[in-house]
Length: 328
Image 1 (cartoon, rainbow, N blue to C red):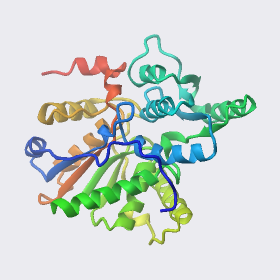
Image 2 (image 1 turned 60 degrees about the vertical axis):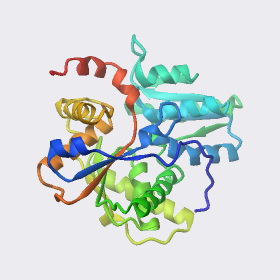
Image 3 (image 1 turned 90 degrees about the vertical axis):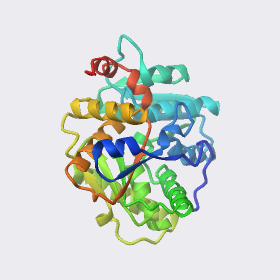
């Protein structure tokens, strides 16, 4: 690959076997790739993307990082941490209104020194462009990081991650039949799909849609794969049949934690001492658990749940109050 990156993450992240969860579900052997432990500002999958995005920003002599997300955005939290680490300004456009009590990722955004601009979700992108224009006029040299860090540049972090996985497979002799991961803005899954072709991963990659329809997310992932491959001069076959998305688990809407997410969070915590988040990994795990119980995976399959981080949101409202009333 021709794009450059600035090393930030604690890599390689560990792959852990989850024997108690496997036994509790009575299905295939389940493993977890711990990208919740990448190290930057509580870690998460965005750190891999930000390694490439930061390199491009500094190459353009940016002085300010500007991005967009939800009130409990893991991406924005890691972007704010990155800006603090490199002495850059950070402006975050968050959807919603400022809560009375600042908790979770929003608390960390503030702690890292980010400036918060509030916007309605429907016009958030318009507000983002206005913020960037104003920053340019003020001489702040802004660099725009898209929603979720999902661009042809950011997704290179997960093209790299697939190389890391293949090296681990070769080292341990464990070859994974499935990767299951949360998929929302599409960059993580797109990087995995492209990286699978580049590095020869033989398994399948299933994205559990956190929001939106499967068709919309597939289109986004395919576009990112094509754009990145062309920009990097990577020759690939069509990715369409490789992009697998299940959108049956997001009916409550983005950021709404329901019974399925709560049960998944509790099961991972009680069986493996492993923390999920209420927005992304909780929903992705709930989908995987349901698929295991329905016999979607073969008994002999090895399934890798790719943890994308987000733990700080556990301590944010309304999630904290909901989780405190989990029946024992």
